[in-house]
Length: 339
Image (cartoon, rainbow, N blue to C red; front, top):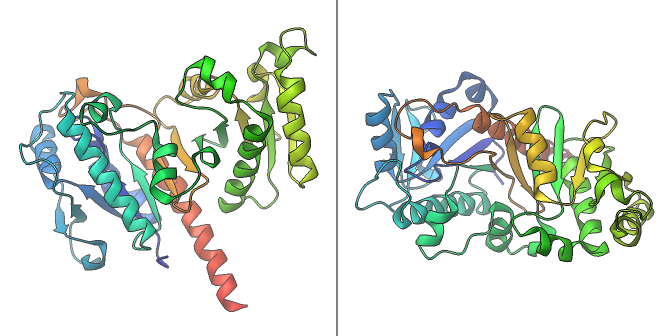
């Protein structure tokens, strides 16, 4: 692993706002003071957005991170050949979905090779990816398969301000999610969250766990999932030395200020709260894999692509999250080297 904080930014769907916010993020002074960034994607995507948005974006093209000359002017771009026919802004097409995955694959490969310390993914369009004939069911599952990690050990953590929300289930129907909520899965979510918090620099994390039914089942009146599944998983985690509370009703859990992170059972229990509280600044970490990874908590915004209207704050926050995590990892490695 590199001893520098170098964050790879995959451009996302080239027809959406991903390239625009990636450029704006790379030029943001706060980001430049926090870490080094290197973009991954087809240079034609960058050129298209520069022309359409009227942006001034000095960049230099490289074939690999190892070739980057950090003292040179211009943001480094690792060119990932994937758009032979160019970009059609605002259009959902298989070619664009394939380009988004190609950039993401290249960035993750650089992280696995130790060339970058973390990865941020630009917004992708799942329909475009499906049109490309590529299986994609969310960044956590993608990262799991790409890194050889069991899929059921990787989870999504939404971050905004001081809030961190981990999802026990994600991109499946509610019916499927309820079937997936076993004692073992909830326990894995708690353990993975605890390890992730420690990697993020929290030495003694406290975790709050939601119920799945209204008012956490109200002692069995509204369902027994909490009694039969969630509470036993919490007991298992406590026995393993994890500081965890719950199950607490999902409508009141996130208001508590004595937890470092929260685990919710269903996609909307976390996403609705996060997007209401911080609609433009949510970062989405995939936790449980060897790659430190985050993505923006919003979509491709095809309707404003190429109009210089996209705000980069969500991607900036995503960079901060992974840069801080990689800094903590580097510090721990340095401490280990000195022993």
